[in-house]
Length: 349
Image 1 (spheres, one colour):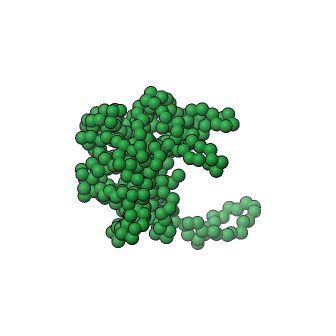
Image 2 (cartoon, helix red, strand yellow):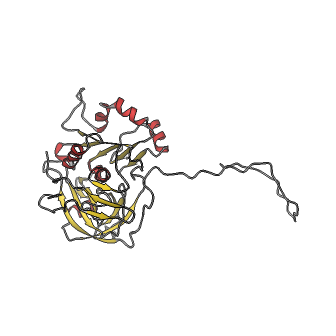
């Protein structure tokens, strides 16, 4: 993929790499530019006789049946967690850091890539921890913050040696009228290429992809909640794997306040061009779009336009719902059923 990040880095084209348990390669699209654009026990009581007993004791009570081992529907085999912990973080290195929202967007979001030299073997859907430099108001080192990984296991360069994050710079005014800057988000957004970053993890199994390559995967994300879904979609549509080929339906709903806040729009549109029968894409731009009733277009508003179709998909036992970054959408009872069947996967912050 040429000029993957405008004026920042050139990605190699059709680059292959080998993982520990699989052979995979990355098929990069012609051009992906990051522009500033407008988830039996039975209780049996018995009398205990104290003393020597020589006779054989039998019972008519049948032993409870052995509990069947639960087989996960997710790609959990060989998943590594907590290889690096806060007391012994991995010294990653920033390779690139670029703003991917427009200048008129309500807030800045940055895409950043860190080298880990293959030492943090994460999977799509996992997170990493970042320990920002400096000390807190009590003179102690800052605590780590977790971020959803925004790259596939192969990474943006296709060599399994990098990890990417999607981070929004946090700046707000508190009740006293003072400007407050988020410690870790500002640390990350201000990083320059070459800077060292303390990384921990990988962590998490909640958001791992389903094993079934024929599954229907419905992804609901707002803002930087797009991160794990970018990792899913790169694996599905930009890479080739000997042990995985996605033949199902991936349906992404992305909610943002303005069109200049849409993240990775060009990438997703290229995926749709590449696999129109396997990838559907819907944006919900709340400050610019409305539905037929004149209501603001939030994710739930956009989804309501496909309510019958979505409901039929949700009835299937190989439909999986993933949410990241949201707290407002809830389907109560049906969600409980999906959760029990490992079909409902949520990560909020």
